[in-house]
Length: 263
Image 1 (tube, rainbow, N blue to C red):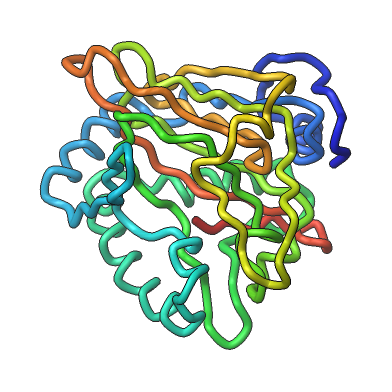
Image 2: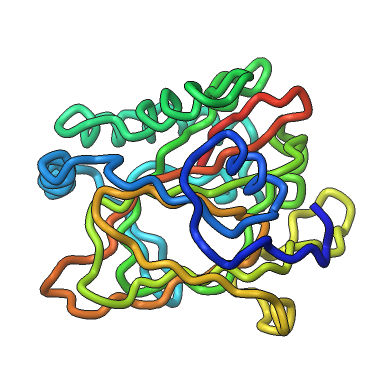
């Protein structure tokens, strides 16, 4: 990924092998997959959430979630603690998926049909699989941040990815708002040894003058974008029409061309 490379066009593209490569290489801003989940599947998913083990991130714009994010362990949490907690995260996730459907497996199968190398959950030698498929209710918005394992996650196998995408299935979308803005300014922080830099609540100056692409969520659709680009989500409007309920993970390209998923 070159630092000043401009997108071919500020638009969404359909899912093809060629477009997936282009997104990994940051030549296009986003891929949308319409019709990924049916309305009745989304309704079952939302109903399962009512009795699931929902937790909260206590940040400026509170986010409810099920599962876990690996970056929660970057300061002070050990690798042993992370993989110990993966088991409980999968149990919480399984409750929702068992009572609706499994969007993570569906996406892996879909990508596997067009990618000529393995597509799988990321794994750590000696520890096992990472968690993938975090569920979030983010109706209040998400501040400017970037996600790229070589900076976020030193000391883990996923630090070797050479490109990283984020994907979200929108199970429920707000009546208005909830817009994701992706800034074409690949995150390149100055590292202090192996200490992960702050990646949330980034300064606006790092995206000044960059191309920006904005997309709206739509129920049952998946959107993928290059998560090394700083991105943010506006607050939802018209809450009577529903919040911003989503499930997703990262997809990293390893040096051997495998695609691996984790959250």
